[in-house]
Image (cartoon, rainbow, N blue to C red; front, top):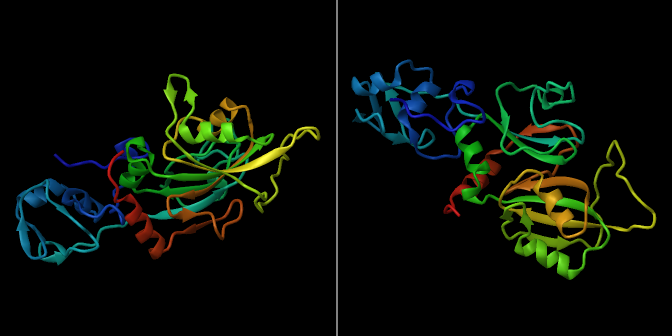
Length: 274
């Protein structure tokens, strides 16, 4: 039976591609990513070799960037996954379609077949990693792996040390307590592009900016956390996903990630499950 990758939607919604960050992957997947039909049968029939050695085990793995994989003595050329960084603007959904007719990623990113590895709310802004690498999407969104995401958060009033300590230690949200977070009160507001719709403000109520790093992703977690300690969120912008940052992007812009960024991402994923 062919091994399946984790996918942003269902397996049938994902085209096969070889991950550039997962390392060793199932040969069946790599064959499918190269357009080989009946990958299991090709392996069992003795048509596949890895670094010159015959492979007949359908559970065999290989690294498409390190190993020489051949089919019928011809080098295999799998299609590699794509990795994009996108600056999601305010009032845009983190999907490529929306039944309600709101603005979507399709209005900004003309690349089919990629999905967000961790969404942002409609009224949040900032960094999205878009990819068709199902393994990476799973690795970044499964809370067991504790992959960090960093946010700039504008809140009502100036949080005191007690509120900051509560955010760092974790706050109850329903039946769960959030994981410990990294929290910094910024002395100077960050230099950000203006939001199309200004935040609500009251002259009598000051605001403050926090830099907050989480290792989980509950629904609207940042907003619920700051509200729980008495400081509602006014503006929320994600500036980093692990080693990947928003630097160099403007609202609505996107780009392919560099080889150096891919290597940094790969290294950041080589961690033990939390």
